[in-house]
Length: 128
Image (cartoon, rainbow, N blue to C red):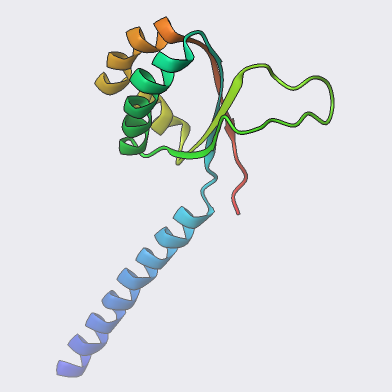
């Protein structure tokens, strides 16, 4: 009788471990989402002092990761953008939407809108 319980318990444990492994593999293949923002800065000093530190901290706290922060842009076809380019990586479009609907984001809007003009869009990545 004990053998039957042992076999049943081993099967259950194996099923549980298999389920966890499949979920882990699924999470690894989920494609990231990239948010691209073009920023035309109207007041550089105030933008860097009053907006950037607060925005960066709130984005990181919400799960965003910065990949590019206004570095040198090199054009290969056409003219390079005159604005600053910021690229962020997020786990999903829903995560970006949740951040943009958050109190932290809404609190920054008056500062942001006073100091710069923004064009923001998201691009789905490819699962690796």
